[in-house]
Image 1 (cartoon, rainbow, N blue to C red):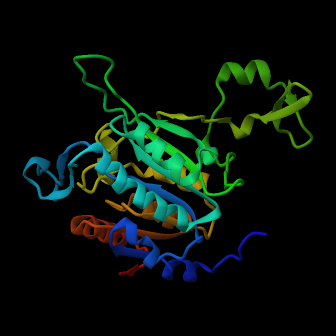
Image 2 (image 1 turned 90 degrees about the vertical axis):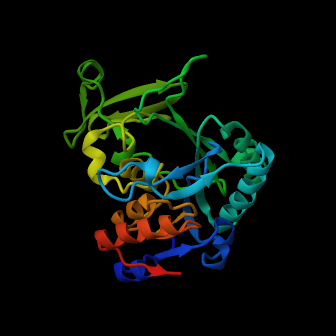
Image 3 (image 1 turned 90 degrees about the horizontal axis):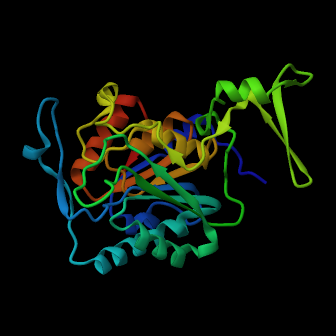
Length: 302
């Protein structure tokens, strides 16, 4: 049985933005209350990231937004595990966690998440291609990042037919395969696999799968510059909109314990979800607050 829907006003006033460490998420988010958590923590890049506060300025001369240096990989993983465990406890039985990392630590982090969630609750991964190209003198340059997906329970929310998770079928596929028309005038094709028949409708499009190339990063596509806040490692709204739509519902609580520039919170608010976000950085909170205020989103500050 699904939870009762809240009014739009109740959802807005329950939004929370806190300057806090992710490990303290449980002090303002009830256990088992969130349907989605997106984590974009430090990647173990081993440098400090600076912000660009005004257009035309350079990050090299800007203030430090956060420091991503660590004594060792073990120290980083211990830090991450404590926070992943807190997020797991905040998730509902249908909730999921998306952990966004890159090649520096994603393999070791998966072992951590297998331990915290249980390996059987691993639901797959998304390979995100930001589109910034790559540089390498010793092998294939890394041009993607990885988002691990874990579920709290056995039946997580998955809105696989949401338009944000679909793409149009190729013209040749439409021409050669979608020749049937149902009583409502919808074109479709049937595929028989084993003893089961699967029906695909042309107007629903195809499932995107696990490689996402259509959500360019902030620096990869000039038109997105209007969206940028100058905060380093900001993720595009299209990427977070897709994640929010994929594994939450209207009225769901969405968490981001490393909210950075606030993209997840904006994505949640614009799709009629509630949100709780936090970050330890003063600049992150200031950037997120300005962005939410500019979008007309109501929230409580802690």
